Length: 386
Image (cartoon, rainbow, N blue to C red; front, side, top):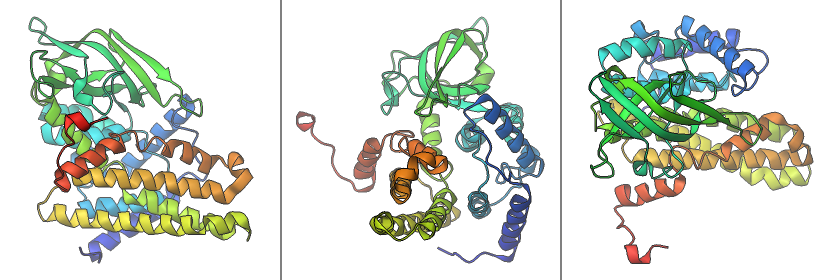
């Protein structure tokens, strides 16, 4: 693992740092889960895109800079260090776009990627169902072939669809062959959330804002042009999406090193007393774990540059950053003591962190993957399962 940056990488870092210092809003934007905040975050995405900072690793024809993986990590570190707004388009930019590049047609890439980069179209992740969360392959929503119209008819329900309350398009899996085995016969679809037959019902979070929604499909027609990958190959396509979500793309280390730095600053500002004393070990632990995740990610980057892949190690990433996020925010609230309920930034971060061990595949499922695919441990016999 080489942590020394080249001259060109240092120049890239300096350019990113200077642009962010000049352009990041002086005051935090309203929550992106409100109509006002959603639109202001879209305007921020447009500003990023105009300067070619929204998707630095994408090709130039799609508003990118063709940046290397190292440069992408550098930009993420600078972005979070600058305290820049949350990415309203992260479902599309970080989850869907890698799959479009890998499995999408040229027409799909040309049609969807530019508006994704500019924030003109925001995407929702529509995977989970009422009885298919971590066990996604048990989903029951269906896709029926319609040869006369050259497409598919979708029926069913998706739940906990992130950004769906305000987004424009969604992506998700539907069972296109009911006779196939559980993980087979699934197809990956892209669909507008204002299509005939689509009903979106917002779901309020702990803070009362609708960051999620349940989406109902009642004979929704989707043309063949909006199938991602081959029909029946949806599980393989979806798992490449999950690899990006659990691995590098959704939670870059810059998010946590910046949060650990803010925690250190809060510790320094806290007067001597019981709160400070009790939180000391937590502050040190959070900083060490954030730095460990940063170094681990740089190791992953080195492996990818040498032709390797993330594979099951993405599950290690997911467990690590999600539990770090909870512990880091708990420590901040301990430092604040009774004033924690008045400190919206840390309190909001804490309530969101609680979802981390659940989304992107629960940590219990991730530990099973780690045990079986990395450690080579046997599955628990069915008779012993509780």
